[in-house]
Length: 134
Ligand SMILES: CC(C)(COP(=O)(O)OP(=O)(O)OC[C@H]1O[C@@H](n2cnc3c(N)ncnc32)[C@H](O)[C@@H]1OP(=O)(O)O)[C@@H](O)C(=O)NCCC(=O)NCCS
Image 1 (cartoon, rainbow, N blue to C red):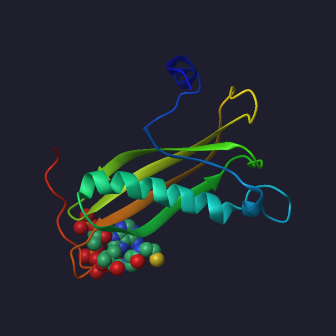
Image 2 (spheres, protein in one colour; image 1 turned 30 degrees about the vertical axis):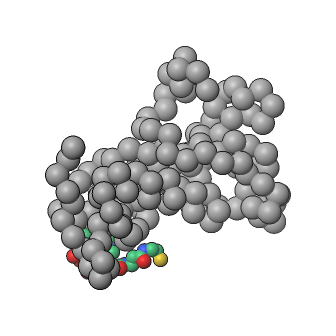
Image 3 (cartoon, protein in one colour; image 1 turned 180 degrees about the horizontal axis):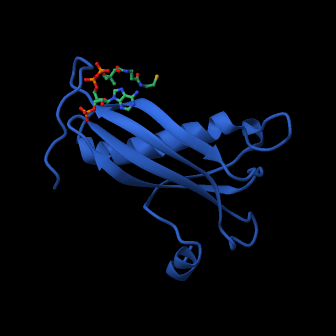
């Protein structure tokens, strides 16, 4: 996607994960299964969490996931994330999912959004303070 296209569809955050929606990921309607999409969003947020926590972290909460449009098989799934809040041990990461038409790759559509809370954890799985912002 070019910078101009990105501005046109008003994307927020950094591209953290991109994948293809496959036939095995469909629901009974033939569209992509919501649980699969949430797992992609969780992975994307996890990648951003790793940058912030600089080590191990775990999802403690998934808040306000909304599925805005159905997703078709063959769509490119792009997860964009951004940090919305830093706590003592936790970080809030908003994730938006965009798809592009399978053939033309134009007219991006936002299909889902949600907020993921990660906690930095130590070797014993206990919360640890976030490192200073670099
Ligand atoms: C993540 C985990 C280590 C946190 O342990 P905990 O004893 O609950 O920790 P605390 O109560 O000290 O909370 C730690 C931070 O998480 C935040 N937090 C805890 N529960 C939360 C919730 N439901 N929603 C949002 N934030 C939450 C707290 O506000 C705190 O943030 P802060 O330090 O920035 O103020 C523990 O809950 C855990 O291991 N959960 C399982 C994680 C996991 O396996 N995830 C993968 C999915 S299966």
